[in-house]
Image (cartoon, rainbow, N blue to C red):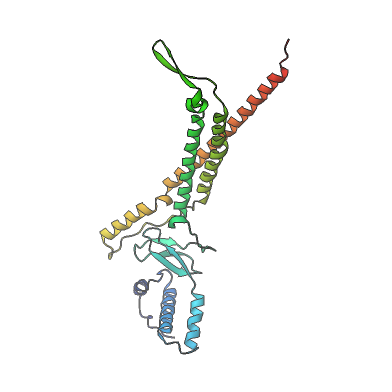
Length: 281
């Protein structure tokens, strides 16, 4: 059956596909079929729906067949759509970048504050690092004068013109409480967040560099590069390195907490042993 597009070249077919915002990859036969299917859908949609007809049935069949996978260009953010069964790379009509079609997800990946997966992953890692720093601060503050000595037991002594702070009746209770909160609450939470943030990270996908076409101005190319630098940092190798460091910070603090716990247990056992072994003469 003859087609209106039979006499066109592959370049002409791709230009028509770009005007219709359709994928431009594939052989000439694939491009022809894609244009014919688009025209069939457009013609069916333009006809009034007076009742079931052969054209309507064909359009419904095409609708069922042409389930789309929607995703955004990783460079300029333009929304792209391809048939579900399509494999291979797709060229973005805006920035001419080629990228593979992502695997369809069983459920839409939606993260708080309209973040991408890697942006949310980085946020979780940052929160974990902040909690890790807070745990260090709480641990060392446990040995401060203000914590170990109640306000009513504080005093001052002047010797040789120098003023020294004294404590009459200090308590280890607040210190032990802060050590417990730091080592057994904040540190495990920080480790869990840094590990989860790194595990949530989406693997990096290598893409071909966009080639500037004759119809794309240098200003448009510069705008695309600026968007890429601003929006894609969380997908970069530098962000992955930072998240990996954050993960090891959580692991290191966990190991330090375990050592503190073992030292505390050893100290208690030693005290009990001394008390039980000591016998008055």
